[in-house]
Every structure is written in C-alpha cells, then in structure tokens.
Image (cartoon, rainbow, N blue to C red; front, side, top):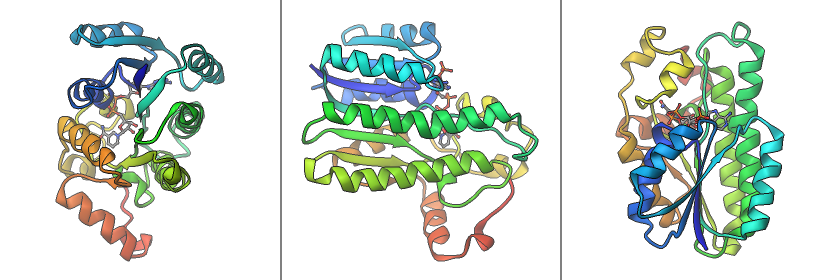
Amino acid sequence: MKTAIITGASSGLGSEYFIALTELCPEVEEFWLIARRESKLKELADKVPNVTSLVLPLDLTDNDSFTEYRNLLAEKNPEVVMLVNNAGYGKLGEAVKIPLKDQTDMVMLNCASLTAIALLTVPYMKKGSNIINVCSIAAFCPTPRMTVYSSTKAYILSFSLGLRNELKERGINVLAVCPGPMDTEFMAVAGIEGRSRLFSLLPRCKTSEVVRISIIKAKKGRAVYTNRFIYKLYRVLTKLLPHSLTMRRL
Ligand SMILES: NC(=O)c1ccc[n+]([C@@H]2O[C@H](COP(=O)([O-])OP(=O)(O)OC[C@H]3O[C@@H](n4cnc5c(N)ncnc54)[C@H](OP(=O)(O)O)[C@@H]3O)[C@@H](O)[C@H]2O)c1
C-alpha cells in the first residue's frame, strides 16, 4: 500500500505536512502519524476523514520505539512513497545551564531517531520515493545559546546530503528543508519568547509555505530548501565567510 509517514505530526509543521500531503500526493493510500500525544494525532486524522490514517503514539527518544516501528514495517510491508522526518525540539540557553537530560534527549530525537527512522524505512522505498528531513537555518552556522540544537541540525544537513548521494542510484531523493523561525509550539518548548532580542527580530516563515514548497522541491529532486530571501542569503554568507564573522549569540 502506498504510504506516507510523518514524525512529529501532532502539531506545527508536522500537522501541516499531513494536510498538504493529502492534497499534493493523491497517490498516498495510508498515512502513518507519529508523535507522543495520541489525542492530538487522532484529532488531526479526524480532520481528513476521507484518507486512511494510522496513529502511532511513539516516544522517539526511546529505543523501544524503533523496535516497534521496525516490527510494524515488517508486518504491513508498505511502499513508503514519502517519509517526513520532522519531530524535533530546541532549548534556548547556555549549554552548561540547560538540564543535561533536555540536551541528550534533543540529540536522541533530532539526530538518532531521525537516522533510525530513515534507515529502517529506506528498504520499503522504491524509485521516485522521497525523504524530507526537517532541518533549520541553525544548521548553517553554530548558534551560541542554542549550541546543542544548532549542532543537531548541522548533523541533519550533513546526514541528508550524504544519504541523498548514496540513494541516488535507487532513484530515492532526500531533501533537507531548512526554515527560519516559525510560530509553532517550538517557541514555547524552547523557552524563546521574551528571552532573545535577536530571535524576536528575525522574520518569521509561514509553515504552510515551507511545507508546500518543500514537498514540490522534494518531488523535483532538490537537495536543500530554505525559504525567504534573507535566509537564502544567510546560507550563502555562512558558506563564504568564516563562522567567526557570521556567528551570533541568540
Ligand atoms: N518553529 C521553528 O521556529 C522552527 C525553525 C526551524 C526548524 N524547526 C524544526 O521543525 C520541526 C517541527 O517543529 P515545529 O516548529 O513544528 O514545533 P512543534 O509544534 O513543537 O512540533 C514538534 C513535534 O515533535 C514531536 N515530538 C517532540 N518530542 C517527541 C518525542 N520524544 N517523540 C516523538 N515526537 C516528538 C511533537 O509531538 P509530541 O509532543 O506529541 O510528541 C511535535 O509533533 C522540528 O524539527 C524543529 O526543529 C522549527
């Protein structure tokens, strides 16, 4: 069965990916929606009752979730046409002051789970399938006061580009989508509101735009997508200039 899988589907960008994929990928016969909050996933699935959705309440910082996911793939043997690896969070503050568990769980979720979900899913993909890994502009340059978060996103960008190269012969594309700030639950989880003047000045990106354009870019076989001119420029500058010149504390 042609399947699309979305992690972090219970809010923000992940929920938007579900809605957009139901419209832009009519070939998808079943959606797998993954996050911890089951009630939110069910609410989302009910919004589009004409598509089949499987709600999977999994904590992706827990290794047992990967076993559960692997077993489900083996049992259902889906043809995964789209994987959106989106679950993630950040924390604002000096790395030494943020609780250690918040930071190690962040590495586990943003890096290890994204890697595990991608590698477990690839065997169920065929030519023309897509992986969208949700990255961030934080991947382009170290970001003090979000040091661990920006490091995880640098990993995602590097992993996406490497995997894309490896999967090219099989006709599977990997896109890293690198958005700027978006008004989602991310802000409250990261504890950003009112605590960073620089962050409050950064232009916001629209979730619906990021999602829809990234799906189109993924289908066209692109490697990286950043929206808004200012963030495209930031990406170029961070490639041309040493990080000591482009790095700013949030
Ligand atoms: N908002 C921004 O400014 C911004 C900018 C650039 C990139 N991003 C990236 O965009 C992605 C989506 O974030 P968002 O802005 O949409 O924020 P969000 O609304 O907070 O969404 C995060 C999602 O991740 C899920 N999640 C968190 N911990 C999890 C866990 N342990 N296991 C499984 N799922 C978990 C959450 O669901 P549950 O709580 O139900 O588990 C939620 O569905 C993230 O990777 C983030 O880094 C965000």
